[in-house]
Image: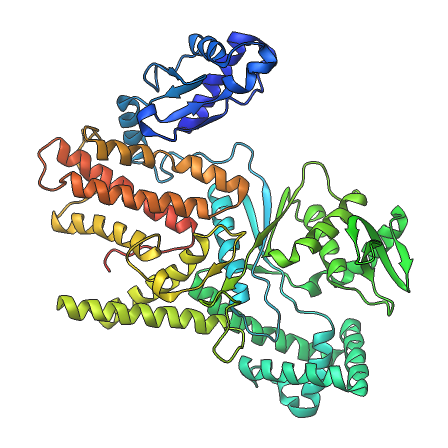
Length: 585
């Protein structure tokens, strides 16, 4: 089924061509949702934009378009308003037919992309030998949601976890552990992740203060890169230990990733430098090999270089990212590569993207996208930290959300004198706690920072996960109360729209495809959150104004179908955000 908006755009384009000629085939009809429902459901503003080109008043242009516009199968007769707006109001019969069609479709009538692509989403990306902290929260949650939406749209998505598992930090950590805890380099899980992090901090301190230790660490990196058996074994143990800890968090968040760390690209780095030299882009500056960039200058106003090989012959993040980019294009055959990182890395991405373009490594049909996001702030408006000023461990943050959700559930059970099993309570606490953290993040425009507040995100009121989950639970409650099987409402069941609240809900249900297509392009999951919040709000108003179980037929079955379709839409939409639903709360 084509989206309503897409069908109307096509018909408007046909009217433009009929009215003004084939040159207007690619003219955007500027179709938007009507700002005021009393004027209709959609508004085409193209007449105003064509006034100068055609040398006519917008209202005359609008009249000519409407005279050639056939939307009789979708809308009431179009109306021209103001200086030349074309207002379109959907027919009730059209709405009913569309809803009845998508009711039995698991995709709710949403088609897949016309030209599916191989797409890569690079997200999460923690560092080995370090714990995941609040700084990894947004990349992991936003990246997972984007991957889910692209997969739903029919794209072949490779979810890559570009972990930091190579370089100087391993040299200094292995050197330090050889001195203080050699068992950690030969025996699996000899240390827990917390101890490993503490040793890493101490190794970093030694590295910064002790020139001898610093040189030994550098030699250890050389041994690692050369494949020395003992160093390589130690490195693998450290990676595996971190990986196990990461997986606990990924399981909690229900996130799937394919790990491909920096070490994967290590054999390809020298070829990056060699090929940049061949293209003539590489210049030597103070012993380092670099590419000078357009539009980037230092404080003195001189061109800023991107270093791809350091004076000591070593490589850096830019070299690895260039190698990874080439591999993803040449070997993975990706047509769209999406990087989900904090906005502080925006310059880095602009720079290495520019180098790759200058080197002609990016084919015309490949799109590179940096998806930046803002900071997670504490309620004091500053970077979110513990009371002692340390970075918040992601595991602690998620556990706290679950514990608070559990306390709230137990309080409500006591107040309602309800008795539930331990399994039920814990499951609800985990779903509500994790969903609240995810939704609080995703509901913000990712380009903005946001204040992290357990009280707000766990509230049953407002634009929160519990509010949306409760709307779904309310519908399941109707099923239980009326002993209704939503999958078996009769052979001749039909959705019939009579009341304003039914119409408002119906129109919103049919806008999901438009929203998903928008997110597929702009990669802003908050648009989907806004849609689901409005859906919950419109459903609750429908529920308050339109009796369901107590209404007479055929309104009763029709309203049950509207309830079921709302529940399906909520469940699908939340699943694309990585959020599970609950049958009861």
